[in-house]
Length: 267
Image (cartoon, rainbow, N blue to C red):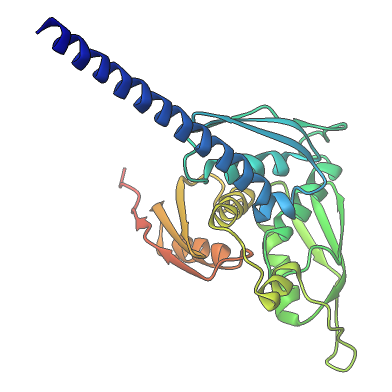
């Protein structure tokens, strides 16, 4: 009888040890998948391709180390990784290389405006020259249409620290308009795959960089390019603006805005 009990206990111990090994192996596989998915994400391969970022994951807890060129890159890296399946938390230890411009300085504002435009596909950050002096931002370069020029002004005016926008961009006529497209339009034309984690990160960071939406707590989920927004908006106009900004982010196919309009309480 004792021998039978001993055999049963030994069998239970063996099964438990095999189960533990399987769990550990599975956790290791998940960590490897997280690291690989990070490196292969659209954000890491395009927006962060010139940055030096190391990604390590242990049991779903991800640590980011290395250097990036600016604050937006640090935020994008964290948001992208945080949106991946299996990630429990992100410890962002990335450092910004070089001297960081003082807040609200001209250099700081130029970087912030440039970054904001980069998130959106219907404007062209690459060919837009941005100048700043004491909160007055001057835009130069070429615009494909009056609509694009106006949209660029609208987006820049909604950047924190911008007081005045002088848009001196030239609108190209149909005869001389080049075939060049914005980053987002090129991506759409090539049907390049943009992963959901990257889209979520881009939408979150874009909304953070717009003054009108930076203070709002907005939950963003993406499935096959369709973005779902959740949270509270102060009014219908604000909700519509959020939808507009999210819809103009690279890779977004559609926006489902489930945010609730909460009227401010009367004092």
